[in-house]
Image (cartoon, rainbow over the protein chains, first blue to last red):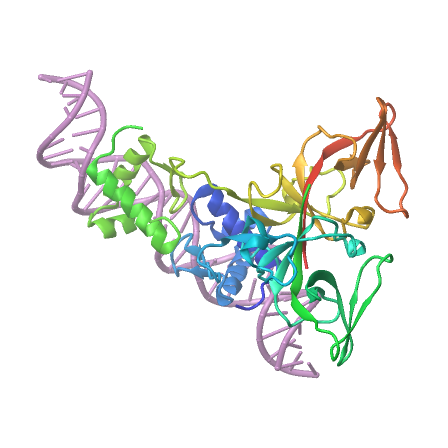
Length: 205
Length: 205
DNA sequence: AAAAATACTGAATATATGTACAGTATAATA
DNA sequence: TATTATACTGTACATATATTCAGTATTTTT
């Protein structure tokens, strides 16, 4: 699946909205009307691009012969994602006793797929707009880059910080709050386990 | 809803099966082919009967303009919520030209129901954890309390601030960033329109 | 620097499609 | 008994629609 452009996304959304509203797909002219194009060929070329990239299929010759291809990882685009609150020392993050509740959320809700929500404690990342009780969408991965907001485990405590690799053996975990100190980790002495990284945030107020 | 005949049921089933298979409704000719009719008018009359009895609706003039009317078996808990970006001065917020795209999201995602996502510009609310390009879930209402994060319209500009009523005629819009000034509004002189209030926040990174 | 992809306008056209009209026949209803 | 609904065939046609061709311009990739 190649990358979709913003205009192509608009066309794809337009098709979905039209489908929800009417129960059948739009014509080229309908898409033009919805999105302000003046030539049916504008819609046509976008449709062909979306087809080429695998987002839709087009039945040749058939009117309104557009169908959206649902090629998600899971057949259903919805999932119950666990919300992880306080993590008991030493216990695996996703252990049942750590799951406060679940949230139903489309799989493709954030840019990347993700595995769980982590409920934030404290204000160490407040200048990055991460406040107490915010829910961070966490993708489980150890593949993190400088500047990523990572969920790290240090001495059986889970912490959320910016990731900065200073040298092959020195990693700094940097808060976004001047009242907090950088955490410097010498990988030869201390154990650092990267749980994953933040791919999004959810706040309910 | 009148009683359906066995042939009409076959036609209705045929429409549903065709929809499941292709993603769009059949033409009269398609129905004929599936059910062995030799005249498109056979399908037509059945469709008109189904329409009259309330099982389907037919969009006049539109090809494949058939939609099956759902007897509300399951209320769908999903919706496409518009994302509002830059709002042109003087235009209604939800006008089509302001809708950047839509996000599929459960209706009960935040504590309260909501109407659209507003894409945040600027950092005037950064100390409340609201950063540039964050998406605020906005519930359209004028019923706001002190301390609520409101979406307000002032001189055809949309702004997000804390709401503080100082007296019956004085309202203050308070930013969460020391680099910004409070906005004091005398309701007798200035026009203040409350679009709604924030019921949640969404960040994709 | 050339080629390909994106993002359009505008016009033209073959055909896909809804729909009306003319029939035939049977069963249900008033 | 007359009327209406059901259940078809068959023809015809206006128009709804997909799709091609000819341009222009910008951005991205090779």
